[in-house]
Image 1 (spheres, rainbow, N blue to C red):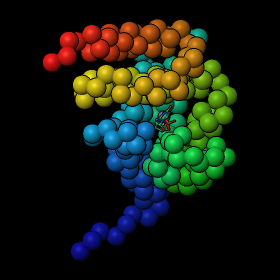
Image 2: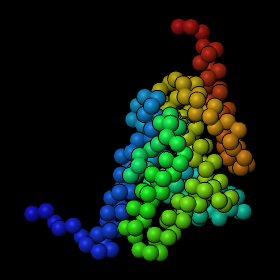
Image 3: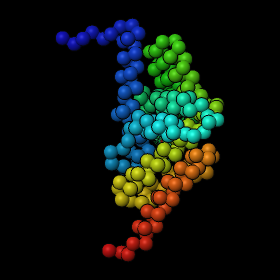
Amino acid sequence: MAAAPLGGAAGSLLQFLRLVGQLKRVPRTGWVYRNVEKPESVSDHMYRMAVMALVTEDKQLNKDRCVRLALVHDMAECIVGDIAPADNISKEEKHQREEAAMKHLTQLLSEDLRKEIYELWEEYEHQSTAEARFVKELDQCEMILQASEYEELEKMPGRLQDFYDSTSGKFNHPEVVQLVSSINMERNAKIAATTSEPPS
Ligand SMILES: Nc1nc2c(ncn2[C@H]2C[C@H](O)[C@@H](COP(=O)(O)O)O2)c(=O)[nH]1
Ligand SMILES: [Mn+2]
């Protein structure tokens, strides 16, 4: 006999965690559209962003807040999916869908947690703090790092160039600039090695 769904706070928390768990099964649309084999999930992406925030040396940033922002920033995608620029959905429409999803998700939590998580999402969405702006840079840096790893896995250097073109010039934080420079140096060496190989 199926167990009756839990009522009250325990049931709501379980429902919240089940919804968030769906992020493990939401593939990142940007890779799907480029036919990447076994594209990462949204939670994969957020996990490495949280680690990137965890290892920042910038003492002017509230590191704990950065980790929390990374873990929450795409949480709405467990309900609305991963909306990519190629979907041509307006910023307003995307914001409305994600706002409604975050309200639904956080309504399942206690008042304190509801406020904490919703405010983290709003902070990132509105880019209203240095921490939120830093995490946005991590978002885009993590994406181009992942793109370089897919190019390596598929042995197709340069295939995902548009991810680099669209993020070019968007990095300002010194640690992120350094990381992006390292990613580009390694990637460009691989591209050069391929183009200089004698035809087989
Ligand atoms: N082809 C591109 N896809 C992009 C670009 N920027 C983001 N994306 C993809 C990556 C995700 O699947 C999705 C949204 O990413 P968020 O982390 O912002 O939710 O869109 C791009 O420049 N080119
Ligand atoms: Mn993201």
